[in-house]
Length: 283
Image (cartoon, rainbow, N blue to C red):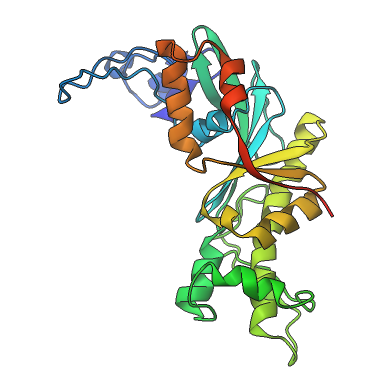
């Protein structure tokens, strides 16, 4: 259904509906992200729903990426990087997706999005497939136990490659193995593979927008790995900002609901209470 929506005009696209033979009257009314959607009837307190927003867009809002150029990356099974591009959509020539980030009142904010198919899933593969590690948390200590990856590079294209390549037929590869290669070095190279893929997306965003991107706000399960976060900071040459609350999707929806209901006066008030548990600087 989202493919029928005109993000520039913020309405259902009449031409596309005609092409796909979809009567426009059967499509739902589109409302802003911060809006009174009604009350939850099954609760005695009649709690009203005043914030509705998509998964990654919610994380962008939850990371308080309110200004053009603010960027976040979610390190889950895959990785999803979004950049606030302000009040006008930016159309990518290098594999990024243009999307609506949110709408508050009549003001629409847009974003660019890039996707990495295999992020934390490569660590799951080490644990469940190769059985090199017993738990995901073990990967950090192993990575730190060796000086480097000994020339090993891993391309975890198990389901193809996402941004900026969009190659569904690509498959995984390992380079640089020698008889001296160890489990620890293989694990370290796997973590680095996550960061290298995210760097591909990051560099495309810099190219498309001509912005320096001096910091990247992060969330998701894999951010618990301090080696990965420091390595990501090093190869990006940017600060990595890890918030106190990692559930930024839920946090973003809550911030929106609080904004509409009057719990928060404005975006500045939300930014003042937002805090970080760690900041990784390039070394």
